[in-house]
Image: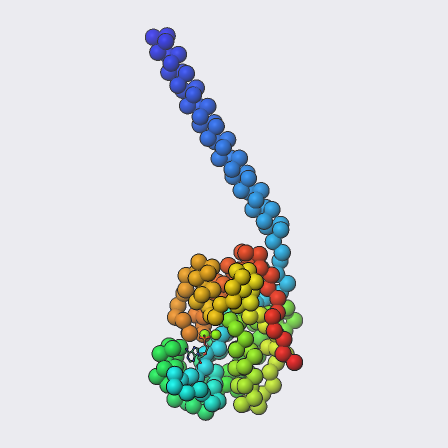
Length: 241
Ligand code: AMP
Ligand code: MG
Ligand code: MG
């Protein structure tokens, strides 16, 4: 009886010691992880902007010939908080092309933009007025903002040529932007052609429909978030004038 009790209590004692050891092991691991998180939170440099304005135009196109002139048909911009990466506001309008009002089959297939979407839309001059008003009222011209695009085409080529067609000036805030492909190249050591390889390289799932301007913007936001996690500092990569 005595020996049975002593064996049992010995077993209980050993089990207790093991449980204590396991508990100690886990709590010290949690402490280590917390310290690591505190350290990385401290080391992470804050972004230098209030907002990122993620923009991705879609425009008239054809598989056989170059459009002349090419015109914007979707104008989406996401206002992203540069500290939390939350999408705080969205501007999105389709645009009615004036020179080639009929979309090619190729264009509809590529962008998923339907003829009805552009037929019922405002022309560029009016959409651009709405966008500028959105910039004033929903973003604030006193805020430090950085446009973010995938490539330079949107703000280097498409916006200036569309503004020239409509005889409108390009606002100063649209003359500076970050080409996200550059940030990706700096972090990953590889300059890629488009958005899809960046998503793959960052193990991100593609969301929505490729070449829908709004969905492309949402994917670019996910790329921004992932690059920020890699401690990427976002600064302008292009200035015009
Ligand atoms: P993206 O931002 O890559 O969706 O493309 C912007 C615009 O570039 C599209 O709306 C088209 O006008 C044009 N584009 C993109 N890919 C192609 C393509 N494979 N062939 C012809 N035009 C294209
Ligand atoms: Mg694009
Ligand atoms: Mg696009």
